[in-house]
Length: 302
Image 1 (tube, one colour):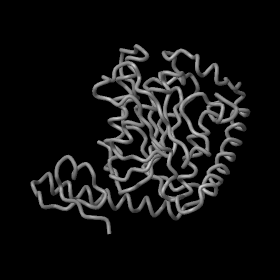
Image 2 (cartoon, rainbow, N blue to C red):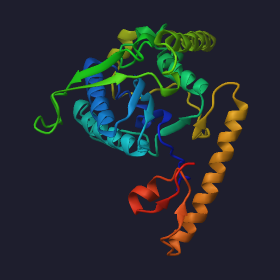
Image 3 (tube, rainbow, N blue to C red):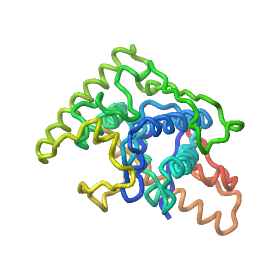
Image 4 (cartoon, one colour):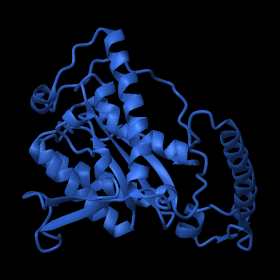
């Protein structure tokens, strides 16, 4: 069983979800772009999740979101379920599962630096993968820096799977600026993200050149078979972090790790008492699953 997640109100997360066997089921054609945008808009509105950026690659997708109501796991469960069932219809892919087994990567971003880095990372991902030379060339769901805080993603309901009487004909979701950047003027916040994006794009192009890859281009990305699998090297066995603090933020990172350790120790002690029959035990602040699904008492954040 994975360790419990410390969930705080209005936390900002970097999320990644991968397709099983690295198939190209999320190929960036028009039908997939429509499906993903509409499902994301409907689901984010249902769970009151604020979307800052979304980038859909052929084998996975990236989100940076702020979750006011602590329900990030419920949001991702519903998003994954709706996308998987609709993808089975769109791609006529009826064998096996859609998503890679296990939980998606959900990393709490503890600092402004981490949030800016992860937004830029999501936008620059097609460049790092050697698919396009500039992030703006990517034909799939993505965003430009100028879109953040100023644009809505909107799409019509896909003409399959979703019953018209139960689902809205169109759905929209604003690409909002993260809470940590809303106190500064919009152009300054966008300039901060743009500088980081330019840095990461330059690094990505240097990496592609070092690997000797040929940039495939938008047309090839749109036309690849969705049933093929990626063959590029992927490092396995890497740690799956729950928090990130950004480059050079060692003190913030160490403080976040210590806070997480203390939370898990307190949660384990409380759960031991709960399993022994003590229903008056109080779980530490940040406990979500036990509170929502079992009605356990949870201490508030100070």
